[in-house]
Structures are given as C-alpha cells and as structure tokens.
Length: 390
Image (cartoon, rainbow, N blue to C red; front, side, top):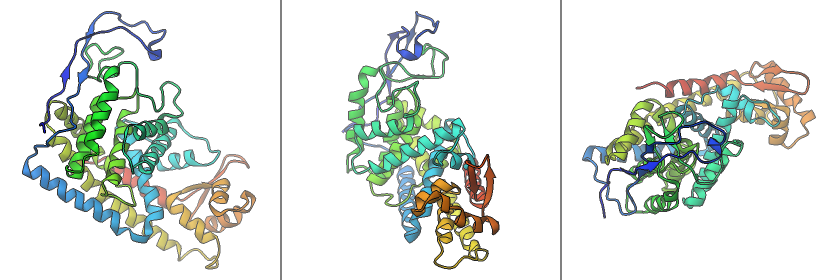
C-alpha cells in the first residue's frame, strides 16, 4: 500500500493540434507542463481523525436522508436529481431558472442554451445512476456521452486526443493546470477504477478521492467537472449510501466553490484531507437544503387538496402529482404521462388553472405551456440557498 503522492509534471513542446485548434493562429513555440497523476490503486488514505469522523457522520446522514422519504420517492427523486444537475452546472457558471429548465424538458419545447445544457447534465446524472451497478471506464464514457451528445465541438463519450488546460488563455503555456498527455489517460482511468472498486476504503472518502483523481486526469475535452460529479453520484449509489434518491452534493459544493477548487489543488499537491472535508460538509449542507425543499413541495401539494374540486378518481389528481416533479407541462407531456390523446389533456389542465395552481403561457395555439409557480419558486429557492455559505 502507498500513501498519496503529489502530482508530477512533464515538459512538453507546444504544437497546436486537434480540430479545436484548426484554423486558429496560435503561438507555435513554447513549453507546457502536463500533469502526471500518481497511481492510487493501492492507496492507503492517511487522514486526520477529525476528517474520518466527519466523513462517517456525513455518510450516516446521507443514508438516513435516502431512507426517510419512504414511499414518497417518485416526486422527490426527480426534483432532487434535477437540483443536483443544476447545481453541478452552476459550479461551471451555467445557470438557468427552474422554469427555463422545465421548458427545456418539454416534448417539442423550445429552450435557452444554458437550460439545454442543464437538461443534458440531468441525462448524465440519470446515466450515472442507471450504470451504478458497475462503475467502470465504459460507464464513465456513457455519462459523458449523455452530457455532451448535443455538442458538436467535442467528442461525446470519447477520451480526448489533445491537450486540455485550465486558465492561461488560448494555449496551455502558462496555464494554471494542464491535464495529462492523452496517451496516459486509459491507464490512469483504469487505475482510478481499480481504486473506486475497492471494498476496503470507507465510502465517502473513497468517493471524494476518486472524484479528485478524475478531475486531475481530465479525460475529456470538455464536461470533466460535470462528468466527475456524476461519477460521484454513481459511486454513492454503488457503495450503498443512497438507494432511492439523489443527494444533491453539488449543491453543497456550490456553497463555497472556491474552497472546492482549492481542495482539488491540495489533492494534486498530495493532501487528500481537504477534498474529503469538502465532500462531507457539502453532503450535510445539501441534505439540510434538500429536506427543506422536500418539506416545501410536500406542503404545496397538501394545500392543493383544499382548492381542487375534482372527483377523487379524476385524472386531475394525477396531473397534480405530476406537477410536483415536472412543474412545467404541456399537452404532449400530460398525454404521455396519463396515456391519453393530447387533445384530451386540457380537460385535466383547465381545472388546475381555474384553481390557481397552474398559470398558462401561450406562444400561439400550438405552443401552450402551463407552469406551477409555487413549485418553481420552491426549486429556485433551493438553488439560491445552495449558492450561500452557511
């Protein structure tokens, strides 16, 4: 077994290559310094007792939060998954309102670019959870493919074949961090997966270190941060800390994104304690925020019982349930969810509009959209809280 070693760096001559640089006039001379990540397959984590204890407490709280929702999984699993995706995107300065994200998810709906990107991130999270039985290189590529499928500038699901860097401008010369040479990526990913699959490391520290190692490898031309946080969700499920819902850890990391990025730097310098601390603290913040969101949505749905006048067996109630997980709907979505013709959807939407639960936005007769302002406000409030330290 080995202790964590700092990342080392190579000296490499810069020559523009790859399709991203085609046609660009860039400096052709200079040296850059790509990282060489240390192997972690046999890593022995040496953490202060307080860090171990904090991670253990956070792990217990994650499992408790996952279990306490009981039979209410359906609405809250969907909302928490989207909230995690939005927070992970926000760490990359990609923001959109809950309404914009909801509209982007609609069948045939129009969407703003940031909202489309966040919807793609939700797909990556869904892929991560679906593939969590076996966390391997193929699963990582599938997560990235789901995330980047609509981005023609990159290669969804394929490891990069060119340099990537953070900071420093149009070339990696003088960059803050340069990912490893692409020739090193397959072996580095195999090493990471071998560590992630071990069963002799406490789960949350193992997840934090795996995430930091992934970000150090930076295996894709873009989307590494979001894919790496999707990997963390897959591992939470794979290790059994979550079984039913998504704990929005990214919403906790977002509370102090600077400390999160600093922790990744500390990791590359050979100190894993800060990234484990950030994951533990992020989980606790996210759970407190998530519990508040769940309570607010539960209260909103309960209050609707006093204003909906439909019969108890009416599909209007099914639409009301749908709104707790999809607060923006159109006739096509309602028809899809209820298994009816879209021309009949209005008979279930109109009573909710008359009750003040839905507000209609009409952009022409064929683009009618309904939204629940109350549920959207609760989700936006969650996002606002996630951006605060506390």
